[in-house]
Length: 306
Length: 327
Image 1 (cartoon, each protein chain N blue to C red):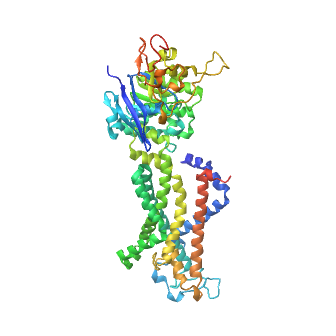
Image 2: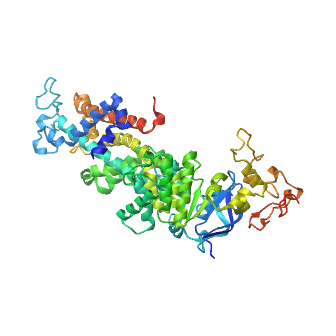
Image 3: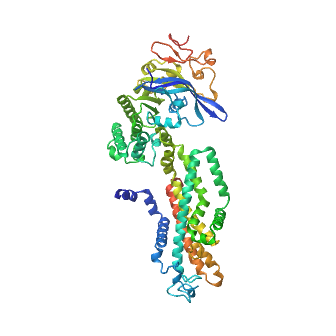
């Protein structure tokens, strides 16, 4: 364990990380946001899911530094009288959870299909990749909307709202797997003609073992890189779906549904309900993307801008 | 006596869009238990394809179109993929040219060795690790216990090739096919690896097919030489016979092309021209455009392998006979 830590301390990975202040800053912000969202039940001053603690009379109180603001609600309250800061914490927790879950699902489907497609080649490859092409020729948002509309009909709106978080994971996962499948396929194609694969075949290993134990780990580094960007994308997709009213219900708001809820009141002066969750969302997506950019530079020295 | 490996009329065809190309035209040779055979020729002569054909692993669009490869009497060309997998790496191992490429960069040496053992034998991880250690000892890797946990990039080229040799030896195969095992290594390490291969083959009584273009290496460790030119065997015999008394003009050319330390500074001999591509093999003897002793018959008729003297050497050339060169 200590040896591993030592190795990590001396790695190029850490070295290039420390030299890049944007990456360091993004990482600090990212970790803070993730920590805050995971610890939201402890950190948040109120529990937005507990309807008994909410008083409708507190609705639309502006942020505390403004006229009419109250000490106990730092960023003001939303239209139902919930403390906006607490709701944002809980909302971000949901967004991060859905984003990561969706990326895991995408990665699972994408790696499976990309590997089969790249390794077997021929007709299987052509068939799977055409499916991916067809899906990519729709916008992912459209696919997500169609799937979520189908789910809403299938489960009924009430049930859909209960199951919204896992369903959103499935929806976003199904909508964006082709990105993964293509990346994995491309790098599997590159790896499978290398000599160590030939050597593994000569040794007499089974094709399954060659695929998953030998080719996959070698093909994974581009997958790691797109994963970060996909997390940001998934969080945005979730926000967009919620904004369109197809995502999280307002009783369990994610950042997207908060923005949506506040949007209706923006012209009546309650701009804070939309603005603060919006800023939080932008910051989160931005740092994840910056980290992804840095990771791509490290993983692919060819792109390194010396 | 049954041969360990008996290649009979082996023909390999590549089915291309433009038509099929025959890469190997009916090759015959045998390897006995513990025998070391050199397969020699220029690039493109079909040496490696022959090697891959033996373990039935020619990459598409190539396939064995005729003939058989009898290994202990069983025809490898007719086995199913599943059965063939039990032969590969188990009864027949292969060593490749570039040790930088043949080890998987993301798995430790130990993992790769244990995995090989477990693919062929029903043994536990610890037993497999013991065998791996023993083999690493055999190829003279210092402190193998530590080395097992390391990744390929932590080894030098010569060390890696020794590990590749150790992997090839893991399951005690009865035949090793070494495809230019030292081409990517520097000269001092070449000799070291060759000595190692020879020593191991001798002590385990393992057959060896050494595919190379380096006649010096062949002279060093093999007992029999097969010279190939554009998919045909042009000369075959014992190593001493071939090196000291080559008969086919191509073999002669190859031997004259070896640098000689007796005349330093002298220009090396070279065989004029290049090997024909498979697309346009000249009619008759495929070597005739480059041949120094060709006659009229060479442009018409494909020469057959014939025995020309009592040493058992066989040559495919119209112009050589027992008495001498041109008839």
